[in-house]
Length: 416
Image 1 (tube, rainbow, N blue to C red):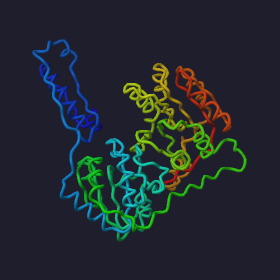
Image 2 (image 1 turned 30 degrees about the vertical axis):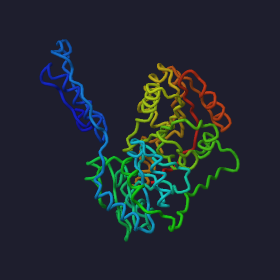
Image 3 (image 1 turned 90 degrees about the vertical axis):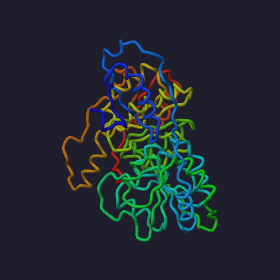
Image 4 (image 1 turned 90 degrees about the horizontal axis):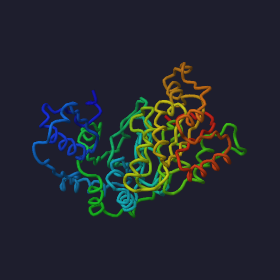
């Protein structure tokens, strides 16, 4: 049953095979691309004594890219006149954040956020950052117009969400991809690919590419940051993010599943540090609430103390709301900010895109989210002004349990 979603799924035929199966599962989970495996152990196998000492072994989790092919890539990058860099989630996972910044600065290249980015790999307040790339074929192609070379490092080419047809790349634009995942390389619709650990590849590219000082500096991302002249009732998503930008601790990690407002989050609440942003890689709903729990538990396990901010839409929050019970039981330092607009805004946006407005079942009136959260053991409050939001969020940072802050907001049409 779990096989389509894991790297390897196995059940040992004999109890004697269990130790070796554990070792194999451990090795496969760590090898690139790292990911979950599933090992099924029959119940009565646990009672069988181990015949001898367990055989423990280690495996490498990094693969060096082919030197000759990487040099060819470096030559093409050095020769281009207007490069675009797209850093995918593998960069952050491999610890390549600082190297990515150094490469972009050496090349003087525009940097775009990868489509459906589940981890940020470049500071979104950097002058070279041009904002998100888009999530449809047409949007991505239009965004890349004017670049003669696109270099995708540590990500797919590309993740698409709604189907809006267009050219995969603008005319006159070529593409290079560097990834540690053979399946991601094989699935690319265009361009030339190179397999290898992304951090190692970036570090080696830094030595091989020539300085891009002769290139014109790319135009930074536009951040209009316009707010209503008077406070709104209910608040707009930009007002919510603007308030959070004032009180967010610099070391906080964000888990975002307010899918229809992610463009506003990048504008007002950019990711500026490695390992501090998590989002969906597929568009599936319901992962964000338990994901925040997982991030907080992982931080505690590795001795890191930082607040986790769960930015969740009221629709998404309902899919896995029971996860907040786990958060409360473990007294995790999570502040969930649930933006209650009483509808599935992202699905309504899709309905309009597909020219099928008025789809039933997309309104969510009458859900008392704060009462539900208190019932699961969390501290919970309702707010409807920016002042109250800032006050309650600040208090939540020092609370000894998980807090759910429910803020009434206006629906936001998603940028599709």
